[in-house]
Structure formats: structure tokens, C-alpha cells
Image (tube, rainbow, N blue to C red; front, side, top):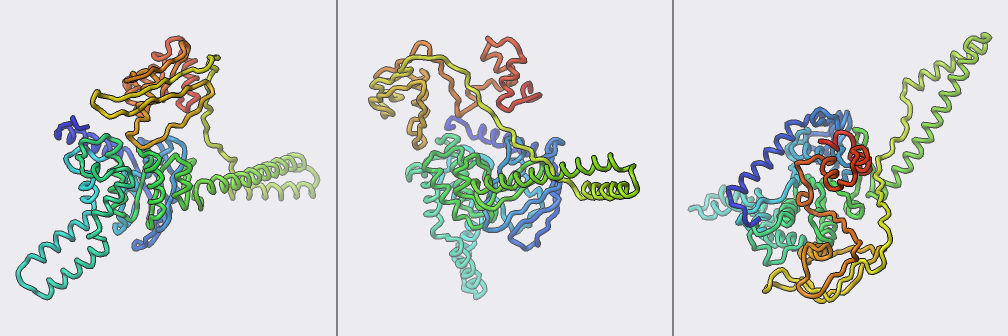
Length: 472
């Protein structure tokens, strides 16, 4: 990041902004504000959302109440981030007095420090401080100006102006920044750390509505735990997207389920949502089967006795009217189950232990640099399942690179069985994937032993990538 010139940073930032504008132009949103314009709650009815003509939401309602923390969930690609963007850009009719902060991307690299970046976001506080300073330095002591100055000081006190730097520093510390890191230049940080600065800005400003899309993506375990505790105290409106059930359980008071082009609302955290949804769907299926049995019975009766004796014909006509009423009032729909992915790992054969042996391994990147690892000693077998945790920068990815052979130990030895094959899922996908190839072309290139396209299509399809997605 530090190698980027200011002109390159500006060009990259503009490119990202243009991309967002193109997405917004392809988006169409309609909805009607149903809550009072001065209310702190937001209720929107008849909400519809389309993207490139594809309907993501149709005639549904958006209900966001002050003091509630919502987890927005749904299948990948269903439009959760698109909905958050539409809300963040006020494409839905949200009253002006409700200020919105939507965390969209990392801070661009610059000469500013994380502390400066966080504090500058509080524009109201900065504006009040400038005005107070101007009035304090003006000659004369007009009562009107003194009164105005007192009002400004009262407002600044409300905003904790004198404690602003301490508050900004506390937030950055919670997200993993040491005091020294808080005063480093932003251009010296990786994208993941600059994303943390953007998150710190969002927490510092205390907006009335805070929108977070996968806020834990760039955080280590300690920072995730801190963020969970911090968001629990958010008193206004919070809407977040997350794939972490633990995080949703810890933070959310409500769940919004985006499903079948509708928004469905559940009280409680993720675990409570799962329980409630299961109960509702069981009752829905009971109702569905009961209705289908009734319909089948009535149709059978009408077919048998519709042309019988006068008494039976009257009964058949009565049942026909009952059937028409049932149909007109709307029948219970069959429950549509969520699509699930079934991961299949083909048998890899038997290899005697140890599959990988790490013997007295020490490692550092440069001759004069610090030791990342000292005298590591452990083995990995076929039945080993390891979770590697630790703060960002501790060397987790370095250890994986040592195990795969991408890096060599400074001292010691890593022995691998001659028949072992290692597959690695990289956190930076662009370093692995050839973005100019379609998924099908890429997989055929990686696995030339699979000659038939149809066979490869089936393999890719198991992971949710189907039809045109495989060749686009």
C-alpha cells in the first residue's frame, strides 16, 4: 500500500466511486414512508428493489425501530448488500433527521494517521469547535455572542468534545491498534487494517442508523469479541450482515430474513430465529397438508355427487362454494426450503503418520528481522483438525506458507510424505484466481485430468455455482 502514489490513490478511489455509481444506476427502488416524518422509527411499505431488471424484493415492508439491532440474513446473492446500499444512499424514503452511516470500504492510503481519520469524521463536532474558537477570539463582548458561545459549549459538552480524542483512541485500541500504530501513516497499513479504521470511524460518529456489511471480515478473535461488546451498547438503529452465528447471537435483538423477495421479521437473536422459524414452518406445513386434504376431499365429493339426487347435488354445490371461498381467500403455500451446499471430500487414500512433521523449525523474514517462530515441533496426521487463532500479524498465514512450502524455514526442517497433496484456500482470492477465465475454464485448467466439461460442471454445481454463472 505504501508504494501507491497519491495520484494512483485518487485514481483508485475514483474508480471505486464510479463502480458504486454504476451499481446505483442499475438499481431501482420504490417504497412509501408509512411512519411519521418526525418519528425515530422507519416504516416503509410497498418496498420493491430490482437490480439490472432482476427483482430482489417485491411489495414488502421495511421496519426499523429505534433501539433495535437487526441482523439481516439470507442466501448468498439474494440482495442483502444491495438493500443496505439502497438504504445507505437514501434511495428509500428515510426522513432527513435520521443520519445514516454505511460502512462500504476501507480508508484509502494517505499521510493521515488512524487517529486523525477517526476524529475528522465527526464533522458536527469539528464545525462547532471552529465556530466556538472564532467567537472566543473576536473583540467585544456582545451579549448575543456570549450567549451563542455558551450554547456552543453546551452542545460540545453533549458531544463529549473534550473527550473526543480519548474516545477515538479507545475505539482504535479495541480494534487492535496500539498507541504507536494509531500515529502511523495510513499508507503504511494493509487494506485489512485500513478497513478497521473505517469501522472505527463508523463507531465514533454514533449515527442514528448504522449499517455494517460483514464487519468481522478483517478482524482477529480479540477484535471480534471487543466489537460484539461495543455493538451491544448501540442505542439507535443498527443493521448488520454477518455469517457468524455467534456474532449475530451476541449483538442482535431482531433478525430480518430476506427470502422469496420478502423481508420477514423475527424477535430475538439468531438462535431464537432458528427455533421460531422451525415452529412456524412446521405449523405452515400442517396447515398446507390440511388444506390440500380438504380440497381433494371436496373435489372428489363434487365429482361423485354433483349430478346425483337433488339433495346430494345441493351438498355438492355447497362444497363447491366453500372450495371457491378457500381459493379466493388464499391458500397456505408449501414451505420452500433454503438451498444448502453439501460439501463432498473424495477419499484421499491412506498415508501412514506423520503426514507432515515440523522439526525444530524457526523462521524470520530477514536476517536482521524479528523471529516469527522459534523451535516449532509438531506433527500433522490424516485425522488432524486444527484451528489456528491469534491476533493479526502474529504469523498465522506465515505458518501456512511454511507448511505448503511457499516459504522455507530459517532453521529446522519440515518433512512431508511423498504422496501428500495440499489444497489451500487463500484469504486473498485474487492471488489465486485467474480473473480473466470463467469458473469452468479455470477449473478445467487446474484439473486437466478431467476431460469432459459436463463432469466439471457437475463438480462446480455442487458448490452453488450453476448455469450461466459457470461460464460468465
